[in-house]
Image (cartoon, rainbow, N blue to C red; front, side, top):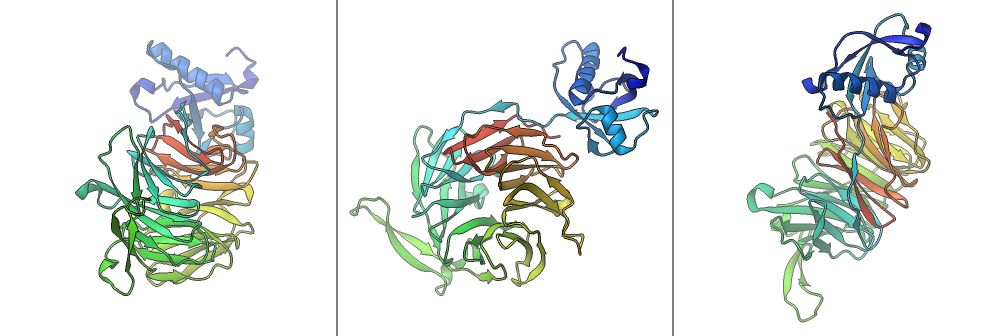
Length: 435
């Protein structure tokens, strides 16, 4: 604090955090070369003087809606803010994982993960099996039947409230989707093997992505065959035109009992992409978004099947997700290290409103936080998972828990990041505090 007065900045620390974490609002002079770590030390010192039991923790700092990610004097210069004024610094808890949980090993590449259920994690693997992990600790169910690598997997979450079971859909390189149902009252210490109750054939090439509609009654699938198909989850059993019943053995033993297995067909097919459709999202009942290796993002009317908007970005795309304010922003990544965010409400422009370029290889997955407008994650073939905040171009954190390409990533329980990779592991980074 005794630096040359010309190299000091007068600041006032403010926060929306609860009272034990509120520093006195008095303006103080701090060295102008301080960055977020030095500012965190000052805030922790102020909090410690008011509360001797305070545990030091890292903070981030916001000025005029933007995170400070450089020394104060550089930030003031870059933003054209006068060093004469008292700078109001809002501090928030730093968003970064605080703990790496033990990784969950698989027998091959982990290519799909869904963390939308707070009690179970769903993974899909190149060995053709999907797995259910209770509390991110033990594999309690193995979902079998695919003859090729699983590329996508999702909880449908039907029937949880009524019959204590969860429904799951998986997509595979064997060109089919499969629907599974399992009991949530599991027995710890053993993995139960479960077959699909319904198979959805119809694609002519590998399935790359699946999405479930908000009502949980429909599924859409994207494929290497350049099409998107829509499927009914339930209700088509009575329609003899769309369903055939096959018998399958409950065990691999040929003498084992047989049980019925339904087979369904698509209710509609969306045509327009000219190359592999790599990713789909279904954020609203009538709206589907898709990303493709043909360099385009497209919006579809789910009822009519018509394309209602498209945008070409000049890169083959691998992943897409909808989120941000009102779930109206589109994040996508692909064949370069840049994660891009667009606002389709701004017609006539293909320029992204945000670009994040800290990865060093292709981006494999991106996912918005389920309850924050600002936060999202990305995974890459560079082996890293990065946490982003729209208020700064720098990553909040870079998770290096994988030893090979990261193929998929998701949020779990709002405070953990889960990811699967070519190192055949599911990694869990927990303790991410997002207000």
